[in-house]
Length: 334
Ligand SMILES: NC(=O)c1ccc[n+]([C@@H]2O[C@H](COP(=O)([O-])OP(=O)(O)OC[C@H]3O[C@@H](n4cnc5c(N)ncnc54)[C@H](O)[C@@H]3O)[C@@H](O)[C@H]2O)c1
Image (cartoon, rainbow, N blue to C red):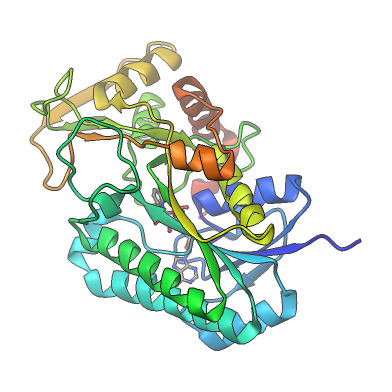
């Protein structure tokens, strides 16, 4: 029997490629649609790659008609906050006009289910040390967060065309496939765990801590780090929720536990065999919240989702991927 097709927009990127791996293990065929602007053909290992831009509605429509997917999972976006401040036009075009193009293609091709990658950046700068629920105020402080919130709202409005959705607000994705087939390869990298791991492995000179005077236990920012395969599993549960007749909803994806920048640096140091590396303490960056941790009760209740990996597994898999010949040769050969 043919396996059910799922369209994975942005499936050549970090979270998309791990989701394709898990989709394939669960008996689905992931069809990746990606323009390869930030992702890699080498990361597409579990189904076909259709090289296309989500802004090209006609091509998307043809792809959707060809594969008749049960659902679309929409990861394709520009993601770097600093870049969004410098170039908001590209972010609004790619992330908002792009999402509109996806919805138009779904309408024409008759695809009824979408799972969308949203972000904790929609909450802006909450003034609390409590885990954030989905009812926290929505007040993004940069164009990246604004575009994600706008896309969420646009997707929800399309319910009147019979398109049902789950918007998943991820906190900090991290880690890699334990078998090292795919991993985190953003370029430039701005996420803490891969940056510290690369520094510990001698691939970077130093790691910077931006601000040591936050109102947290050790003065550095606290974040909620969730393993990329746990995120991948939540997408499969979200697809099955929708295809099983479940309602449209929005939920956070995080572990509910926070770690400070210093705790991450110390944990990586310890797990990499106490390698010594330079840690530079500098001023705060604008726009960084002191404390950003998810209340994930909604995801537990509606999706039956629970993260399975803790900090050790997150760092262990990242270390393994970044130490691999596969990772080093990949950059050498480009
Ligand atoms: N990485 C995180 O910690 C994190 C946290 C919260 C939310 N998110 C969201 O998750 C999603 C995936 O993040 P990621 O870390 O895997 O990013 P990524 O950059 O690794 O992957 C994004 C993929 O989308 C593709 N893409 C971008 N624009 C496209 C377009 N116009 N047409 C076709 N393909 C396009 C890129 O080539 C890339 O392969 C994003 O939507 C991001 O906003 C990520």
